[in-house]
Image (cartoon, rainbow, N blue to C red; front, top):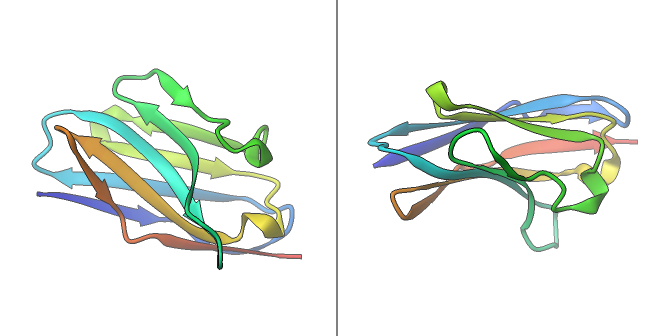
Length: 118
């Protein structure tokens, strides 16, 4: 079994920054993909950024609205990914979920709330 735990959410003013962390633990042989998704109230869950195994970044600009503001990084030794979010806007308010794909199975974290007030 694999556990996925997010942390780092919170409430900030517009223009502020937050750093989200996602750690995968349990029986893990290799991680094929780790990524961040978000779901705002009344909207569908959308992909924000993701990274494949190793150090190659698959995409960081899936959502145009976060280009130049969000940065994805990964610590392979810790099976952890980080999402550095700068210049936050009220429209970034959402629950952010981490998704991990390992050995052909996907696992979601419980989500962490990010609230940006104007």
